[in-house]
Length: 323
Ligand SMILES: CC(C)(COP(=O)(O)OP(=O)(O)OC[C@H]1O[C@@H](n2cnc3c(N)ncnc32)[C@H](O)[C@@H]1OP(=O)(O)O)[C@@H](O)C(=O)NCCC(=O)NCCS
Image 1 (cartoon, rainbow, N blue to C red):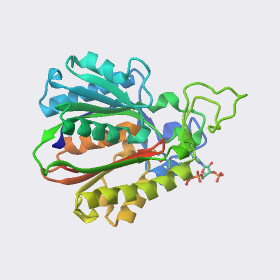
Image 2 (image 1 turned 45 degrees about the vertical axis):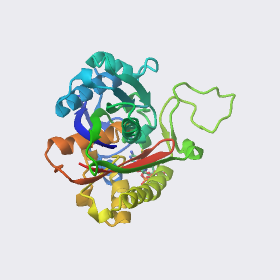
Image 3 (image 1 turned 135 degrees about the vertical axis):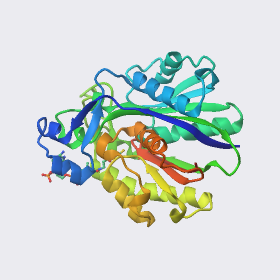
Image 4 (image 1 turned 90 degrees about the vertical axis):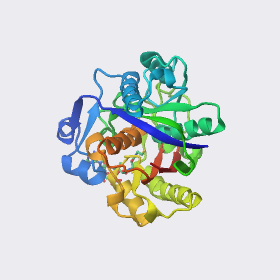
């Protein structure tokens, strides 16, 4: 059974933190951040939470799909920064929007989260277990950043994006999907909730409750693994990279996206980006960009898209979707 995205929505917090603001906080410069990452500003949640941002994005996706909350069968929130562990953020969203008929749960696979939520929803819907799903990627990375560490604090932002997913006619929607994980490389990008016991050695070197990243290793992983995964889904769908209208990739770093465009031999005009204004919002980045493209009318009926997420875990995945 074919499955597609019927509506999108997003939410960005009001406060904007620019590179110039960061210059006043750590030893960095607007030029360094723009050259190395492509980012100029990012949104930071002050009065919002992961649950409230998820709820706003979810309501807009339902509106865009022309659905009522009572129609929703399944709610999946992809997040690794929810303020409350139990109950999960998806249950909070269910209560807030009044989706009384839905089952709700979260998944945590960092920056691959939204893609994995989409694949999970597609698997449930094509099995016949659920008719539809509201999937959300939402993060408040500002809450787990060490604002004194220039190597990480310039990279991330907050926000949420959502999509309503439902069955569709054959030959449309998701044509192929693939995903993978490499847990042995988990130490390359991680954060822990609690400070570790300094007496106990473990694979995670940092003892504090902040994001730690080996930027160069993450970069190498992304530029090798992501094009391979994209080539696999394209080949499974019987397509070539040149057949794709839009590559909607996780917005981690403009240089990663440029390297992937080069590896696939497709110009950057097929790689929409919004990283300049949002920074890396982890699981929120793909649905934020998707909603921007959808609402600005850039997605035409029948367009071929590749969605791809990658990040902590390490995890990665991609799918081909006929809009
Ligand atoms: C993080 C990243 C931008 C760093 O770029 P880079 O070119 O590899 O830079 P390096 O880490 O080699 O650091 C170069 C220098 O800049 C310095 N630097 C690091 N952050 C800086 C900042 N914000 N401002 C100014 N200088 C900075 C480093 O200390 C280093 O100085 P040194 O040479 O004196 O030691 C890059 O590795 C990257 O994009 N990695 C992928 C990260 C990512 O996308 N993660 C999320 C994936 S989901």
